[in-house]
Amino acid sequence: MRPILADRTLPRLHGVQHVLVTGGAGFIGANFVHHLLSHTDAVVTVLDKLTYAANEAALAELPADRCLLVVGDVADASIVDPLVAEHDTVVHFAAESHNDNSLDDPAPFVQTNLVGTFTILEAVRRTGARMHHVSTDEVYGDLELDDPKRFTEDTPYQPSSPYSASKAGSDHLVRAWVRSFGVAATISNCSNNYGPWQHIEKFIPRQITNVLDGGRPKLYGTGANVRDWIHVDDHSSAVQTILERGRIGETYLIGADGEKSNLEVVRLILRLMGRSEDDFDHVTDRAGHDLRYAIESGKLRLELGWEPTYQDFEAGLAQTIEWYREHEDWWRPHKEATEAGYAAKGQ
Ligand code: NAD
Ligand code: DAU
Image 1 (cartoon, protein in one colour):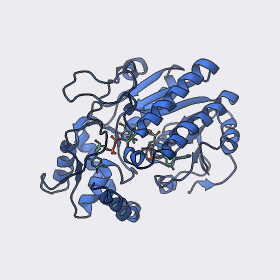
Image 2: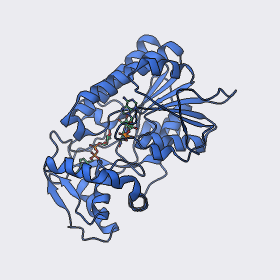
Image 3: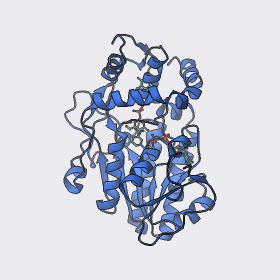
């Protein structure tokens, strides 16, 4: 059944967790809502502004008595305050999430990622709700390709882009609200996610849909840049683990030892899709392009006992390719405009 679009909240059920998921119609948020509903008894309210990045369709099959969609802005206290008051827990995914967009127009990144997080924090300060803040490994800047070190919870913040700077700022707000006001929050910083429902502006879905269209993948610069890939289901299980066993005030890095250069990923997509591995274009590089991300997730694994399920990137990628092949009706309406935007920038 479709979730109901409404200005009401779900009825309170005794002994059941009521979870507010901001950005729950986005790529990771929607996958997390599915995960939570199938692994717990929680009832969920999604608060989402339904920006260009939202996937209402991803919530369409969920049971209406356990999932409600409220359309609204996380930076609007008149919506956030009464909603937070009705929930035990807030999981805060809502954000502007694409680095390239933040280079074209940083304003919505500051508004949603900073003012939005501030608005959520003020609401949980008033009600005492438990909060989990979903953040990114990009707050730590980047690593050299040959650096033996990986990011840990102690790595100094050094964000490069307007997106990562806004996420870094939001993390600092959460820590300040924990220390100054006793807000019951945890933070996670995760590496690059892949899987179903990811917007086709992002690297992996863009290349898969280019190939499905008979076109060529587009590699920024040399393609030597490294990302540390994790399947979105593993991100969801990590957030659930932190909600259940994480220590208040703590930060946990989430990663699945998935380092790959962009060139390796493009070649693998081409091979899995039956094309020559050389069938791609080098295009204009991203300004300030971070070279390498790599996560050391020992704290999450040793303290909380979390382990990723997807250990085989090639198998996860093949599954994701199949998903995009089967969901052309979902991505097709956005493909032409997305590619036109990139083409205008030589990308
Ligand atoms: P996404 O862009 O796919 O989804 C973001 C969702 O937030 C959308 O549904 C959008 O409508 C909603 N939203 C945006 N502005 C809003 C506002 N003002 N009010 C309410 N809703 C709003 O993003 P994603 O890739 O799913 O990322 C989700 C979160 O995870 C973000 O906080 C991001 O920083 C973080 N993260 C992402 C990755 C990744 O690889 N994608 C990795 C680590 C952390
Ligand atoms: O590390 C976590 C971050 O991962 C999240 O915080 C962000 O929300 C998420 O978007 C992602 O950021 P990236 O900038 O790493 O992801 P993106 O998919 O945009 O790009 C991945 C890599 O691929 C990056 O090195 C840029 C490159 N790229 C991207 C596109 C869209 C290309 O080479 N070609 C492309 O067409």
